[in-house]
Length: 81
Image (cartoon, rainbow, N blue to C red; front, side, top):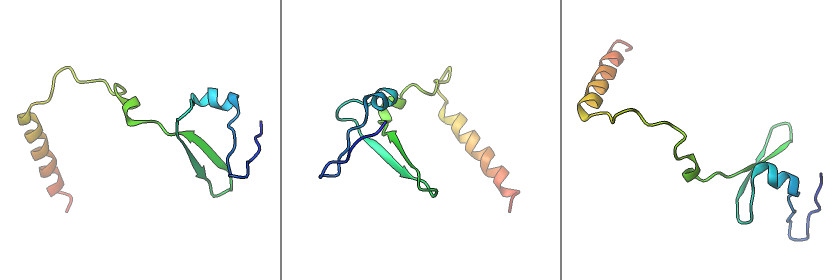
């Protein structure tokens, strides 16, 4: 697939590529230039799309449990010095 560059530096992303990446009008993309000269185009995914990717615990952690975990971590760190 190929696309021409306009005088304004714009190019149309071929439909097959847009479909593959799930891109729609108004979506943003990121370009990455690798050391070997290759360029990668990736969709910029909004943070809101990550909602629900991590399953919630059965019950919320209590403040007491957080304090105990912090204290345990701090005591482990003492032996590293």
